[in-house]
Length: 188
Image 1 (cartoon, rainbow, N blue to C red):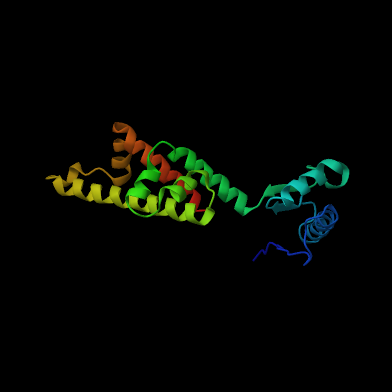
Image 2 (image 1 turned 135 degrees about the vertical axis):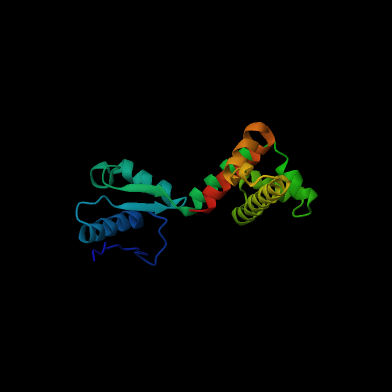
């Protein structure tokens, strides 16, 4: 059995909001990765503002910490916020926020903030509920369609039925696209 050595660090307990601490972190990570996986380029994930400091270090000391020596990526929070903002852009103009208000789930202020992902937890919850509701409605509609058929050989698979409905109806296509994007975001 081959085991891949890995290491997740909280490398220090002090606050990391300084160039010196981030450089120290990068040195520790480089050493640890060199021991665990010789020759591998270290990868760091940082949330703002540490990401900005780390990129400034890469640009200021390119021979030691350059972009060819370290991979620096946004952390999970920034990636999640970017995904939520893309979903908000897809839903803009669809009256999604109006539906949330009309259903009594939220008032207009918080509902409008979900399009900009101002509140990550609330936005995520509202979009998950919406995606689940749309999927449930699609399944209910498909079950109704099956019951109207007299010949079992005429049954179209669920996915094909959804694709046909999306092609025939622009509103359905918009909902299907948003729902697909939501499932993609939440399945990772």
